[in-house]
Amino acid sequence: MVLIVALVWFMWPGGDDGTRQAGGRSPDPTGGDRDGNANGGDAGQPDDDAGVVVPGENPIEHVIFLVKENRTFDHYFGRYPGVDGATSGETMDCSTFANAARVKLKDSPLVQPHDLGHAFYPGLLAINGGRMNGFNCIALGEDLAGYSQYDRDSLPAYWAYADRFVIADHFFTSMYGPTFPEHLYTVAAQSYGIVDNKSTTNVEGNYCDDPTEFTQRFPIEDLSEADIKRIMRLEENITKGGPPNGQLLKIAQYWESTRTCINIKVIQDQLERENISWKYYALPDKWMNALQAIRHVRFGDMWNKVQDPETILQDLKQDTLPAVSWLIPPEGQPNEHPGSGTNVCEGENWTVEYMNAIQRSEAWPNTAVVIVWDDFGGFYDHVPPPHYDIMGLGPRTPALIISPWTRRGGNPDGGAVDDNVYEFSSVLKFIEELHELKPMTDRDARADPLSGAFDFTQEPRLEPLILEPRDCPSS
Image 1 (cartoon, rainbow, N blue to C red):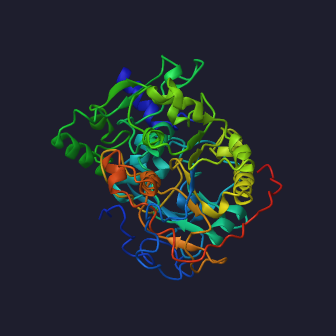
Image 2: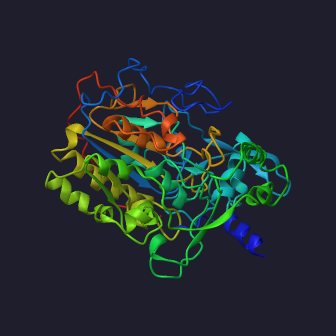
């Protein structure tokens, strides 16, 4: 009975409000399974070394890692010119797991009708061994709400940032979902094998502050090479067992229960040891606060550097922005999590407010901002993720890299499309190379440090792109 309950949780929305090597380019940046969006966009790659980080000689003094919630690349940017985007998507017969019709991606409403399944199993089912046709079979996906996308009129600010700076169209989520373990990757380049969100929501506190919280994990330290090969084979053939659970039961046999208060290395440990300034701008007791789940951070002096997201606005005004920052928007409108009346227009306005503050600050000439969304949220994306290990990668996230030092290309305002293969560990690798830090796991060791996003041989474009917030309709 316990296993059945656990599997139902894994199929439901995540509970929160040929393989390419990392660093390789998409094998066909102008082709693949896209729907005619290969015109314009990229005016050619810079010199191979133009984006290489040289410690002590690099102009980037501030990195801001902004992590929003639950969207895919095709959902936000599938219609953007020059990217590897799609405007239609494959589906599956949920009663047999057989291939079904290809459907047009409809215009997405600003307020989604409901949340969608985006946990570990829905991620595997959606990818379906690279077929990318199972998004309609995840929890609440039968109405095809996940087969939708925005355009320049509905996401004008994000598209304007893509026009001017860099849009990365092969930036994958680090794992199949959901929020909690994905956010662990943004600080640790791993999730301790955790594959789910917390199990309880009715107790005050969160993660290390709630002793009732447990979740499921792969005991990665105990898995043999044969175990790992078998799990990856099951993941690649997830629908082979037939509806409703495919191979999930066989995969779940490897899981064990664990507290949501763990002790793993995080990059903040090295930053602290090397006296490199940092802050983690996030509210406590929220799904997205990964550092609240790291025991030695939560109950040590480093917890003082976990601060309200609004604090970054004050730090920008006072010219005290740290060298490395994580900016985690509050729940609701700011983080764009689908469902519960969240309006993506309001979330985009929140981003505009903070990006305007960054660009008006003294820090701007030497700042790089990376904006991603933490998991796929149940929305369609057509590009099969590389299968690095038993955790992922997961479907592509929308990704914007914003800096005076981003490389230039053929986007409407001089920006570029970057088709290098990235995941969340790539941002950590970029930070590590800037500050000569050691990798923490195999993930950040192999990751591409955003090498296709920058050109440090060019003169920077220092003029800010200041945008006006828009009046948001209710739907």
